[in-house]
Length: 277
Length: 277
Image (tube, rainbow over all chains, first blue to last red; front, top):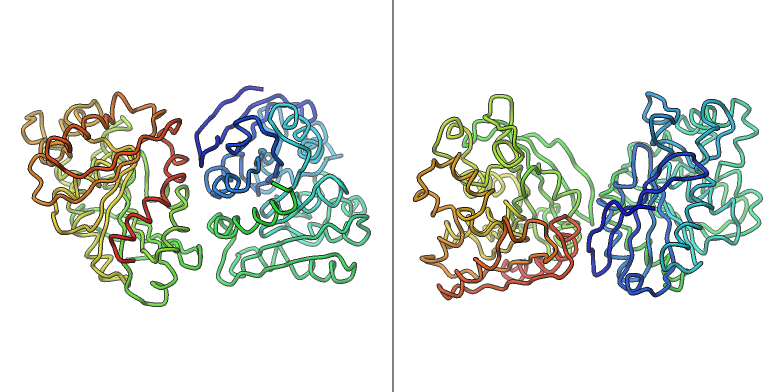
């Protein structure tokens, strides 16, 4: 573990760390915001943030203004990169496959299977690392945007009991049914679409053993709303399974970080209440 | 004037506009945040933000979280680019001269004099454009960071009565006495250092006809503190001239937007009180 950035921020510290991931077989970076209490060594709860297509660990930490709210609530925020990285890691010329586009699954197909185990990274290896190296307690929650919103929903649904709270901005809710998801799941998991169900939030909701409430914010002027995001499918799935969902459609808002920044404070308040932060 | 970006943000709109500047002789972009009242057509006061070396109109609008505070106080925020731009505009390989590094002066020396009239652009042409095209009243204030902090101080000091409030983050306060300023002023104004005084805040303070109070925030862990910024020189100049100054040294903070974001809310509250926003 090597610290590559450190900035005072809202009374705490925004840091970026580099480490070799055993799960992914490459070097990875992640951002970590430590509120003042954590800087003093007090154990704090941790919110994990999963970013969207093309992002690195930088986008969220520079654009969302999460630090203001993490400082207010005393929550550590961990923001990993969006895929394995490096010259030895498989990639694709498209922005929606390969590096920057892991979809947070564990790939089973060549050439992806050797590095693309992002689900195990974000759900297992990274939390263990964070809880060992920082003053983090075991109260965890997860949130994300777009591909990372899908990642947050799926990761929470796949790990009952592991997260106290989950929310998403503009998530891909049904990857099996939309072009981004079909392309990614087809490449990472194979054309056999039966394997996709365990990576699809609306499929997982049907039989979820834990009914952790979902909070979703979605801009109504989002350019990907009708083609890739489809919150209507999530609403129908939650209705059918009686899974608790708060879906807020926000008139005029698009897919950008301007949308995230506008409502991230409400998500932090929601997470902090569940985390006891 | 052409709108090239538009995003809902904190109940208002973050926009980016492109226009041909008569003063600069090139195409320019600027960011404008319109709080909800301005979107409805109500006249609002305007805060002008001047960015630092290497920035475009994007840095401040994506990283500072100014929109949250502008929305709260009902203030329009205008963030221009940091220099004239384009293939026909003189440039230099260094990051601290030429495009991205105007120092907000009116250049007199070749090859700069033909385009580098950024002082007239930010103080005259841009406000006139803003007050014509947006629901802006004539209550103006100005703020900036680093080279743009210098720009804010100098622009306010050179135009008594034009701004109701001025503040700066990590400003270059004495360009005549530090390497960034000596290189830029030497190139734009010539080696004759007598011409530099009218572009140097600590020189202008000596004889300022208007004693508009200065608010300055400066990080004590700023990597440029001792070599380029020198708030001690500003303090001495204000003491000698009895110019009102609030200088806040912030332990641990560096030169980055993490610093700006942490304290921009306090600057907005200060500006809003003066603007009647």
